[in-house]
Length: 187
Image (cartoon, rainbow, N blue to C red):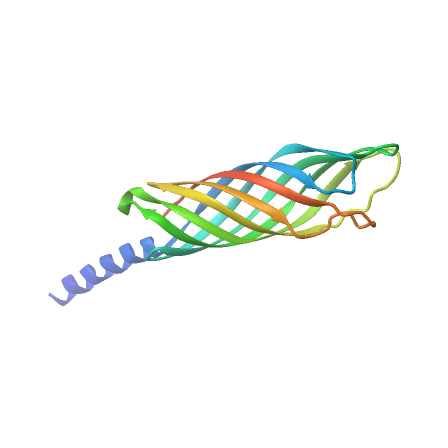
């Protein structure tokens, strides 16, 4: 009888732990825009990303950490100087705090979240044959978004507002990134 009770408690604990912590891969696409008033024109570009996430669920609240690799493109131009097209790629880490607005039980939920993202650009390709443009390798951003969990899938839309001035000269250049990601929860 003791073994039966112990096995029953173990099964309940494993099931509770699976609901508490979830992890898995996610794939994303993004549209990156230059946010600046110091250039005469700017254009957006698209990129992709891959990451892993771990989520801790606490009733209606949750916390999530992500670590991955992203690529982005955008361009800026200055009258009389020329256009600079940026292709940047590197690792990023994200911390998110969220609230489950519409819990749907075992089917899933609808979520709102905020967080912080840090990117380290290990690859910076700035195509401008007129002059060298210094570029900051680290970029911090605040983010906000909405997500939906359905069964083991998670679909998120987030907007990342850049806090870091990426142009190391006297001009201001920040990023605004719209991101859509699809993830799969193993637990």
